[in-house]
Length: 106
Image 1 (spheres, rainbow, N blue to C red):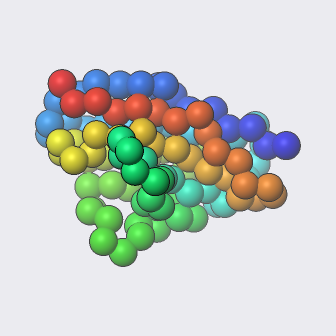
Image 2 (cartoon, rainbow, N blue to C red):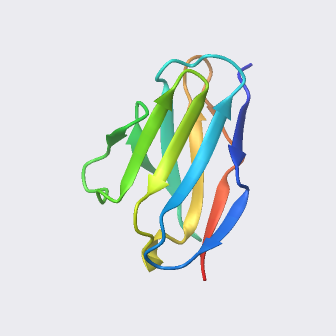
């Protein structure tokens, strides 16, 4: 199985800050990488698919980059509504999620 790790596991940042979350795969997953956002008490929502493609309606402050084994989710200017846990998901073979990064607002 392909294992996924994320860093940091949690972070606290101020409104307007640039936030970056890293996802590492245990082997090459090419561009088979999605990012999900899960707000408290809600189901996970797909934000970005195939590394860098924003789902319709997702604000442009979110962006994704990377390839192979190393991927990054960036929030260019953190907003209060971005309080959530963010997960990467590989689907090169059986889908597998990373452990998540909890984002809090200072």
